[in-house]
Image 1: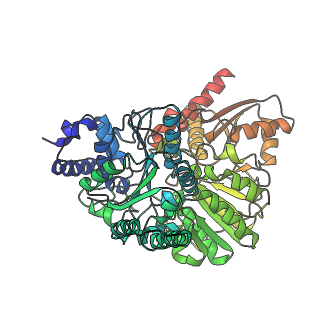
Image 2 (image 1 turned 180 degrees about the horizontal axis):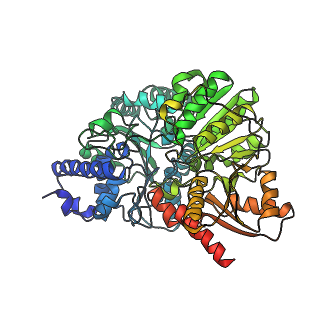
Length: 632
């Protein structure tokens, strides 16, 4: 019988021997690997924290104690141990359990996460709240070495050290983030990892100093300076100690007994304490150990070989990366910037060819944009590639440092719209609502790979202002093949800002779309013609801002009923822009309908399923237009 079959909550393994706990680790890894091979998910990071998670549950009661998993990429073991093993086969599936911590899902999930570097701030908030309300429970944050490099994490460390509140910070140092770690902190941690004897040396020196007699003020000052000097020489966690946070480690993150003993020894320390654990990403699955970046967010793969079951489809990300690289060959002013997502944003193509013009700033979206602003001031053309959902963190920098100064920075928003199984923390549902109101900017939403190539060409070469290009996480809908991505004969064309395309003409209803929704709308228009003999006009707006004046004139003069479709929140989105623009042009007696993301956070699930549920697929659009005709 498997040990996992005996576990309904962490209380069931509190008294397991360490031998049993190690066996339990193997069983959990098998479940994670098998499930992710079928459902996709964050594999390497979860395999690396199995022992660490078990140790936390053995020492603490996470139904009462509040421990927060930063980002949430490493919560699968936690979910398996807290009564969700029976639901684990539905991980990340529609109406199944989330791939991230979710308080509404379990009392063991202390805080909802999905974006990096929030855990220390939230845990510190818990610690203050606990003390103010005079309660008694442990508070902790589990944060990775890459997340620790974010500015928000540093802000929280600074506050935690100053506050002296009792809390535990577990630094899960796996030496490998989604992309290679960058920055001074990464270098610092590398020095710490290779010096495990430092702690013993530190203890010996502190014991020695206790026995030095102090005679007079000058001697006392000398001894204090000596102690500080020795501390800087031998103490690996001095950066944390100087912030007022007790440093313990490094600790072997795969040795349960050592982890348990460490947590037992430090859990009642009166102030903030940081436990530095060393783990291996992908542990227990050789393909993931050898290529952790590939298995960070894994698709379907073969259990025996680790090879992908589905061949990699050509995506908008691929088109972006290869096109920008091609454009950079002719334009040496182009600079590429990412925030720890080189391969995820497709900038690996650019990096391979132009290393001296590529910058990965780590998980620091705010810094990335203001860094780009400084580069733009020198006459270069920075292109910043971020996921739409992560760009939310840098709204102020885009407004204040770029748009206000009218700088030529190109912000490329990958994963705009629905992203599927990662769910509400990762859907790019709000970028248009946040950004379209900002002066001086141009926003493009290409509907296919050709439009994306044209959009990039014009963004870097023809628009001397802040430019945003947004595109989805999906395979391309066009006919281009991998070999054509670097087609040197591709004909780039200048496009005036706001220039739209009329794809179909006819009927009394006009449909206006931008981005990937154009493709579903085109299918719907064809179905209406073939199955219902209804003609519909279809516009690809191409631009969210500015809107095409000719298109607005045609809509205002020739149509009384208009349907807008978008993959952004309807509130504050593209449709409202079209309505307002028509009203401002004097076309006020119009019947305008909106389709888009509703005023709620959209659950996780396959993108095809989500579009069907939200009625944003071709069938949903057909139904909406038939409803409009019935009402007419």
